[in-house]
Image (cartoon, rainbow, N blue to C red; front, side):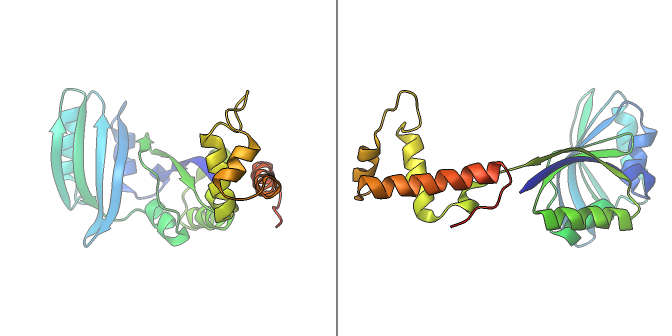
Length: 212
């Protein structure tokens, strides 16, 4: 399953928060959580920068902000909970079924985030961004490996036990015979289950198809 780190130029749209980030120099906005509410998007964010009082005033005076609660404040940062219109970038997450990953960082109009999903979800997500007129750049694309998705229950059970008991350590703390006895199977059966599990993991790592 691909994992992508990308930067969205949300400042190129009418996203109020992105526009704010371009007007307050040297300010970093860290989005800690967001979820749809009855009147928009409810978000908790931390804003760091030298102009904390200015940031708070801009939130309280902005017509697009439907509610604002200052949760904490000090000389260099403020924690705010606010309700705003749902931005196009968040809508792209919703349409592609790729939930946003937190925290995300917004600075000078650019939203830096990381997402994990299927190739189909990623393709739809980038198409949604293009349709919304949001320029973006992919900073990093990697492949994550979920062993629970590629292994059968029996393979997962046996290989987990093997790792926990030190079968893959050097020198080994557990023999194949001991593993087999623990599962009440013969040594040959244990070897076959481990071999198939290892093959699936290696093929997934190399992005090759796994066969039964």
